[in-house]
Image 1 (cartoon, rainbow, N blue to C red):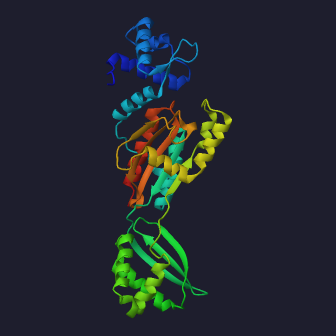
Image 2 (cartoon, helix red, strand yellow):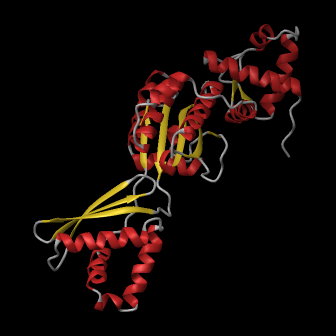
Image 3 (tube, rainbow, N blue to C red):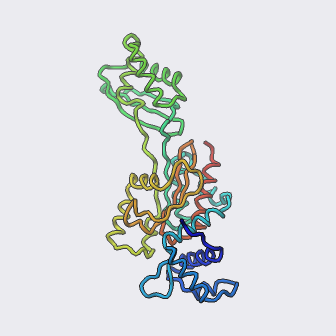
Length: 343
């Protein structure tokens, strides 16, 4: 069973974390004594630090007289900061920065930039199309050589374009009829439900006798409504890591940069450490499971319904030795701002 810390131990532990974040140096008992107002002696603080070390919250590097916080200490501190965080409205500056965005995609991209600017860490923003996307409308345009440009717009504001080749010629008037039929009958339906209904119609052999349905089935077979829109992922601020003492080799740092450049890797990172079903602020300390070079990193983020109804994830990636109040405040402000935008 995890031992409960006394109030005094919590205060000293958090003071050690804060001091280490500021200086990056092992923290001595005398330093904490000077920061406190209750005249607690260095000897008493030293005893408490010794107890904290035995419980896994502190470690002593080499022969230094000071102690440094472990991942367990950062986790305890971060949870405390998150619990005391107040909902702060987004500043006028942030609103002005996001005002020029005209599409959900632009809003998400700008959110990544703002997270980086506010925290001086790595800002990540991802728009995840819902698994049950609903149709807004389609358009069909005839191209040379029996090719058709199929345009599908979903209710979350995303557009999918695809060119299909038909085995038989089709006129633009016929395509217009198909377009009108689909938009009239299926707008607002989930894509998977439309596909199921078209399959049902075919099984009833109605498409054999109905030219419009037969042509629609040809387009359906060529992927008219069978696609998965990829997540939009934006990341900025990787260069901020260069100025940090990360205690990893150059090769490991290069590996980390390569991993951050791959959007699929970023999606996997968010999937692994941010629970999409949890609405509140989430803090993950120590990300070594995702990449060995991320062992001493932390991820702070949250999931929300963003512009256009898109599931949006905001996150800041940085070393465990980060300014947690500032990072958490930035994420919460961006969440509040994105939520306030028209859907």
